Amino acid sequence: MQYTKVYQWPKALRWSNNLPTRRPGPRTNDMSDLELAFLSAGEMARRVVAGEISPAELVDNALTRIDEVNGAVNAFCSTWDDDARAEAARAGDAVTRGGELGLLHGVPVAVKDTTPTAGHTTTLGSYAFEHWVPDRDGAVV
Image 1 (spheres, rainbow, N blue to C red):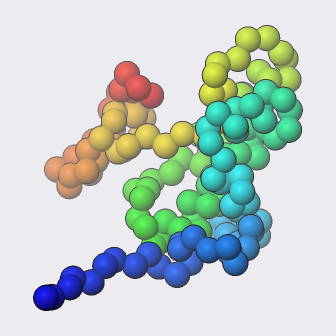
Image 2 (image 1 turned 90 degrees about the vertical axis):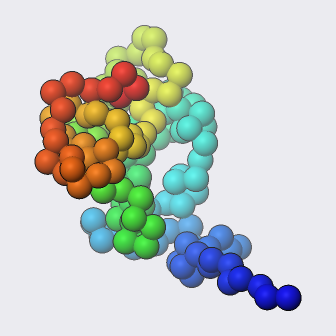
């Protein structure tokens, strides 16, 4: 009987009880907080509303984590750091003002490159669209 080789995750990405909770990231001298990176969206939102963490901290942690692992997993073709930080600042201001917030207020999200994003290159996963910049967002953005 012949067996096929099973894909092994790169060592840095495998889950391990010995994995440190923080690792250096190339974007800044900061390191991502793995505990924070693996929280559920609901728990992130709960902590934002409770004032335990700011949307800006969540975004910075997510961007740092992307830099740490994207070279190995190639999950993001682009990130819009300035836009994400500006949105996080607005979300933080809304929390500070009080009032009604959405269920996932302040939680960073990723949008698949097959979804039109106004003002940003959207390739639809094809070289045929590598220079396409939509004039409006898709319904889910």
